[in-house]
Length: 503
Image 1: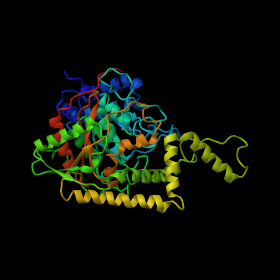
Image 2: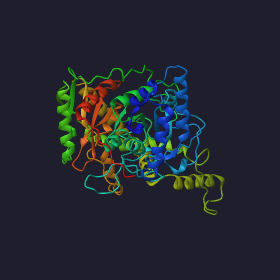
Image 3: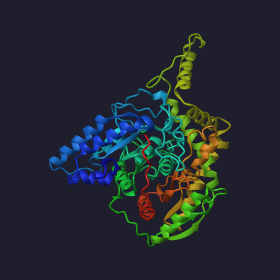
Image 4: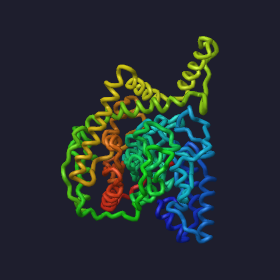
């Protein structure tokens, strides 16, 4: 019999509905897998085995009563620790929120519980979702379950910021996981760990109850074993939410039911600007293979131009830190989270100075180095005298990038590109050079700036035996075309590699 932990969303749900096994049996299997693996992988900040079991018991009771089960019935998932979970610590992987237990549930997590999913725990991430390697968490690095094929045991980055999510799904200790994507934080970790992840159109999934990084970019999405599982989970997560002013008031399509890998009549654009000098040879070969697969599925492949691509990364690293500096101003030690008091005698003695000293001491102790770096950048570009020179210019560039995509989609239906410029790198290899780390997002950031749906699907292994991902980008609101093209690649890639258990 197949191990229950080897099953994904659809297989678990269908098995529970059909009576092949109970939801409780599934939850117990995954709880045991988490307990065995997490000391080595550090994917979960907090584990919640009771939550998973309670949800499973409800599903089993509903089935016994003959009730219709939800789309995620009996599926144990990991919840990125950016989503507020009622009664369960929510930290954004930061010391400044350590111990914060929300009295409310985020909209996305509530939708998943309503659909029958259970929570295995809160997943580790880069602090406040700021990072590409999961090395900025206050609670320690997440370790990728993958190792290089040459036998090297150097720990590898699982990607970021949703590194706990990607590691948990790849290691088969969660059937699926939530992620958030501000500039690639679902797609890049999915590519690094050989799983599938989709960032839907901005506004598809509610941001209410999700700790904010950059509000005009942040978007929740699913990370799962394959395209079908992502389509099912996205359907459960998405929908209009009046509590989120940026939520799309649109019906949620049946993406899973409409999946179709026949791409006859579909035009796929290949952006010439993404073929950059010095591109990794394995990544380039993977991209060429992806083009061949889409042609085999019936698609017509055409050359397109996205001329402002080379401006995307610098524009993103102005806009995102600017919004972060505004969003993170709420962490002051007054209302919730960490409070640090200045050393006696360090203030001027006035109440105003004492309050400022408390703010400073709290933020100095509570925020990590990368968060502080981005707050400083963001505060600088928003300051008088620099706002027009940096922030206003970046917003103009963002508009040009969105226009590039609009013009491209007049000629094609979906765009194919690499997800990342390289496969997973070793922990510590890029952490000393923030610019090298930021460049890792070069292919992911443009779709985020334009608010477009984009997903990463596994395309194979490089010469070191590490996963490579291919990225598909679609028109706004057209997740279906992205999912269909992803399914076509998935079927032809036949990717079934998984990391060997070493933990």
